[in-house]
Length: 308
Length: 308
Picture (cartoon, rainbow over the protein chains, first blue to last red):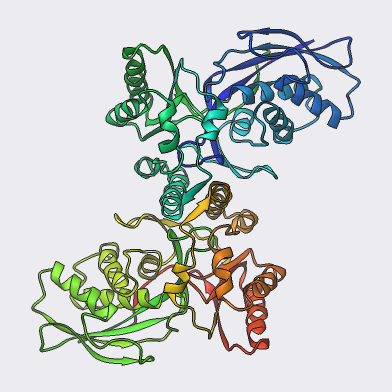
């Protein structure tokens, strides 16, 4: 018996919710195949799509998180092998390590007959993310696992809330082939912010949440301005403001950096606007000689799914 | 012809929403009587309930804001006299100046046959608040005028959203007779906060908003912890933490400082809990020899109203 699952990429922060908001994309994402093996504990059969992931089970986010699940279930004697098909860019700010961790635990839980609910799997997937990223945080993992737009009140307790998704909300995400190290992206942030910026940011954040509950696209648009993180990180992404200005000119509700970057996301009302706007944004990277990939689609509401 | 109106007290900040959130109380509040007079522009007939408010129309928040309304309407030639009945404590952190400003413009607009909507009056009432307080901010004025729980995305544009009010949400507010100057309360705040505290605060703020939309009292309760302002201002209010701990022991969802203090608010699920909890909180001030007044009630949904 084999189980094949998909876990989607995700956009963390959503501009105004640094470390507390994230949403899942329809595509891209990772696929993981899980099957019982003769060994004991997690092992890796093959990895496709990248040569940057470790084969050692205790260093790979997918097997590490799945092993934590096995241990919790008292099934550490069982042997399970994973094939990992990395079908999304690495170091892109689209939650690549989170998608692998989610796919790993979700595949193993499915193979075992679903002993835990999806929500109960969250902790184990976050452990995998912590292995890759150094901190226990759920802003990519939770949307990748559960789908939707997720608010994390507190990482330590995984106190999360699924936010409503207005019907016509469509995301365009551009991944440019430039390298931004998450480490640099974190180190560039000043440890303090001014109280005045905090007030402006909180007004926008709270109004963004209210806008989602009200399906008020104009309020969402007025709220999607990040006064805190984007101004500090934009320097790491070539042509960021040129692309953002194009997105807004093409009627994006808002546009900012996806996670730690270099990917850029924009939210639109309607598929057509998102596709046109996304193409215009992608085109700017290409005019500057930077290859870029565009993903557009509604917010992924399902999260991780079984493919076969 | 005379018009008598009431404008309620309000609780700004609500712990997690410094400068962006406020709610209106059922009581106390200010009453203002407006009548046409022989003079030109705004004048003051009598002021009761305090000897601390100026009689000069350009220095009194009620007449100043009403005069700005008259000017906007092109009716600066009309003479209108206000009687101001201050029925709430001054310098209490309960929005006293905001209530006066709201009552002034609302009474005059009513006397003139409602040329503007309530929402349109907001700017003029905020001008009155600015006269008293030095800054153009709506976190007391908007709830006093419009009622409910109000979110202010941006003061400059008065971009506000009325938030939903869970049915059983009841406030207890204690006003202790100690003086805290708004100036001191502002000056004690550090100009910067750490990014880590900002993350904790924004997680709570966003979850508080979601909790209101979901009528999720437990989420509201988990979210009502202010990591930024309360720790800095609590030192200005004697016995603050003793009272807060009592509130939480008496099943308050949360408890923090009302506006700039010294009043303390707590939110409860249900009237009975609010009354018992409020009494226990008030009692602590009295044990320490500080006279205190308790107000309990649901969130005021009407805001300013015509009494006769």
